[in-house]
Length: 211
Image (cartoon, rainbow, N blue to C red):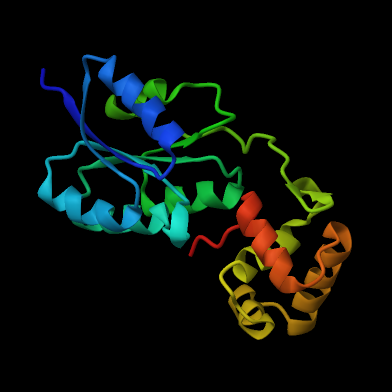
């Protein structure tokens, strides 16, 4: 049986080293390529004979692994993809399922190793967490679980630089509701303004726009 050809797409050196260690110690897998940016993933998926991609979701400079995965699935649907992330957010799970990504692995809080998920995925399983694990991060003075789902939806779009009116249109709510959500988040976090709030949310990984 030939080895499964794997590409790693992740900007974290620690994650790259971990994945490489697992792959090199397994007789089932062959590491074909390692990329730091999702921007190159589509190109090399076409050029190389890739069987499996370990795709980080959020990378430097706003690179979005989910967008790259969607493009790859449209041109090479036979390639299996495992989305990996350190950001614990149920919206990421929903988006990954919608795209058709086979499996999903939370870097820091999953009970299974990435090799377990790789083995099960290549055996034909779709491996997703039963629920979003608890991993409470802090944004200034507030923990993530202190923000409501409505506030988080607004915050995700704020990280993309959207205005209040565009956020309202995107979510199908009134602009005054958007302003109320932002006001409440500023009160909870102690951030001085919406710009600082959006930056802190992006840096902490609590909320990042994934569209």
